[in-house]
Length: 187
Image 1 (cartoon, helix red, strand yellow):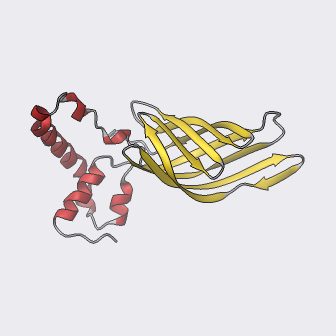
Image 2 (tube, helix red, strand yellow):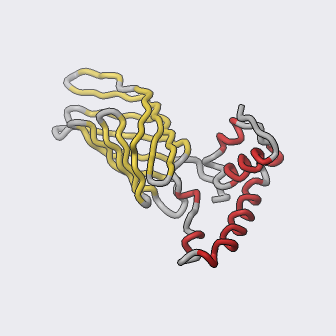
Image 3 (cartoon, one colour):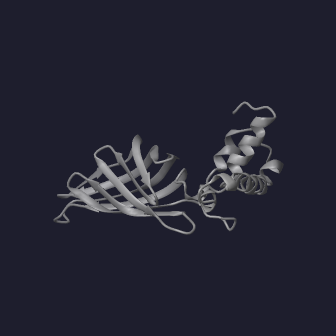
């Protein structure tokens, strides 16, 4: 449990309210009351509007503040799928699982819990893994990160920012991968 008093509850509420479908872990891991959590989206929107109004005279381009939409942040829990093969098509791998991303500015880290299988030469190999990674990057709507010997690149679709689609390359194998995160009508 997170420890909190007074102001900490507000911070948890606003963090959750910035993107409830993605940040549901805030409610799960804290003592933020469910009754309060239901109002956090409205509280966050009021706070964001107030900061925008307060800072607008000091920004070169006041519209810039409005473009800082937390939904564009990749932080959250994603369900992913991938499929790769070698150039000849003899070796094929598929996988699916959970991808947890944590974005701070242009930096990306996270973990992957994958159930997978590779087939080739009459054999099947388990490619399941639980791994963590750091040193990923985010540039606009494009992300990239390494998981072991594999490089993942993807584009986050707009306007809902709930789908990643890209390419994974692992040594002599490559193919498409995609990930989805929960979507809500509130977005």
